[in-house]
Amino acid sequence: MNSYDLDTYLVFRRKQINGALVMMLDSAANSSRISKAMKYSLMADGKRLRPILCLAATEAVGGKSENTLRAACALEMIHTYSLIHDDLPAMDNDDLRRGRPTCHLAFNEATAILAGDGLLTLAFQILSTNNFTNENQASKWLRVLHHIASAAGYEGMIEGQMRDIASEGIQLEIEALEKMHALKTGALIEASIHTGAVLGDGSQKQIERLRIYAKNIGLAFQVVDDILDVEGDPAVMGKGVGTDQTRKKNTYPALMGIKESRAFAQKLVNNALQALNYFDNKSDPLRAIAQYIIERER
Amino acid sequence: MNSYDLDTYLVFRRKQINGALVMMLDSAANSSRISKAMKYSLMADGKRLRPILCLAATEAVGGKSENTLRAACALEMIHTYSLIHDDLPAMDNDDLRRGRPTCHLAFNEATAILAGDGLLTLAFQILSTNNFTNENQASKWLRVLHHIASAAGYEGMIEGQMRDIASEGIQLEIEALEKMHALKTGALIEASIHTGAVLGDGSQKQIERLRIYAKNIGLAFQVVDDILDVEGDPAVMGKGVGTDQTRKKNTYPALMGIKESRAFAQKLVNNALQALNYFDNKSDPLRAIAQYIIERER
Image (tube, rainbow over all chains, first blue to last red; front, side, top):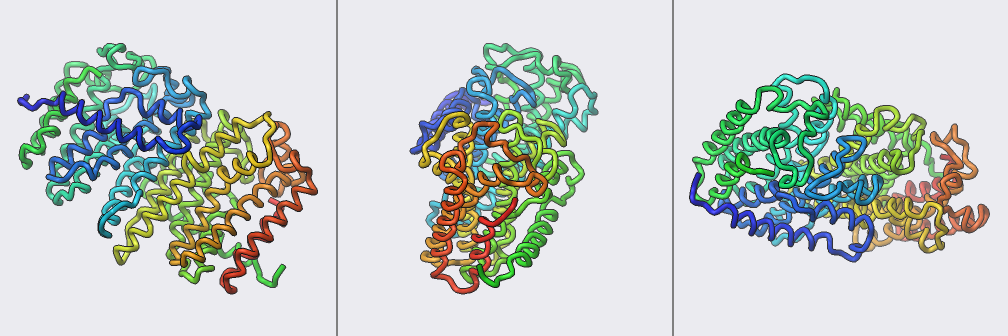
């Protein structure tokens, strides 16, 4: 779509994020079994979409992304905790994640539950690390932390997972499916972009535009996820495919067909790109990521 | 031990805490299944020890406890989440808690895992609610939140639970047992008192003395818990007794005998009371609670 070299950008960002994540888990207790389980899931080969979006949002509003890196890592921890818990036998009972056996298979169920708890708690510990040069930074970080907790909580991501489980085998209307995804994956994606924009000292108008961008790519991401579960290559994806159908999950391809799902995803990405019209070329990474979301193979 | 009327104090505080907790879970989404599960466990008949200690610590340093109530409730949420997860089949597999079927029996396992996640996340959401009149309040709350997250996390409470599970059926030395309890229950009790002291604008010296008090009553609480599991009345306690022995858990009575355990708990309470010598009668609740911990029947 444009000449922007997204691959180089993603490689650079992933390296930066992975480096920071490893350091955050390297403490005196890093030889403990719990920290090993946390590292096992956190340092697996993830896309790092949420932290990258967070950093790219800071860039887009003209902020310094170094200040955002810490928050970006916390968002990846929250995402990883949600994957560990969703994969548990009592939930989706998945065997494979990010190309590896799921945490409860590699360790055991008790350790996986606690590793998820540990990553969620560590995210808030990192978000509240106080190393500011001036006082009004504290209030900004507290606001960001609050927004993330709301998005991840029982009126956001957790409610989305509840609805996802409850709706297995029950046919949903498109609106209910959209709401479920807005909660389950959309809320944290939106919070990631919001966090980057606020920490980069974006204006109210910038933050509002990025919210529209986030809402659209969040849903597009999920639609493509559903398509990949039908058409994807498990070797590339690092997790099983065809599982949605086996579990009688509500998906876009099942509800509207593959071709229509692809057109819907494209429409959402177009909406997202339109919301970025207001921004200069510092938002090129966000533009390219929107395109990447629809073209990705994993 | 003194003429202070602890019962009236505890009844008053519990009512205040329960009233605040109910309001915090009363939102637009309060009819959702997840919020029902969270409420089910949170509003069961708990001792509310951690929030009461938090409020009493604010009082002891001469602060206004109204400002602390929010944090006190967050601490109870973190405690309740840890109970829900510890009770899960993959962990302690308990049937009864606070006089009711455990959350995974009343709802199901997936809901219980998510209800725990929801309470943990809500705690941080509440701790970061920004309704301050001035900026340096924000920095204080961020510090408090960080302390709580560290205490609850993989180098604190979660590590304690890991050690507890790992040590079933393996005989521990007294030092290892003490360290396990310091992590599993001590860390959050210490954080509760620390939170109250900091939010009440206690001096460094006050905070340090209260840390010693906290450390001692935290361990005393656990020693008495072990004793009650041998000698307690299940009808009074609202949970099963004798379970430690069945599970081959390491306990103080098993390691040092019942009589010696009781003497040890008394010594710890004496240490705690000594740490309070520095304080005036505003610390009477803390004094009475130390005594209550050793005399309690549940």
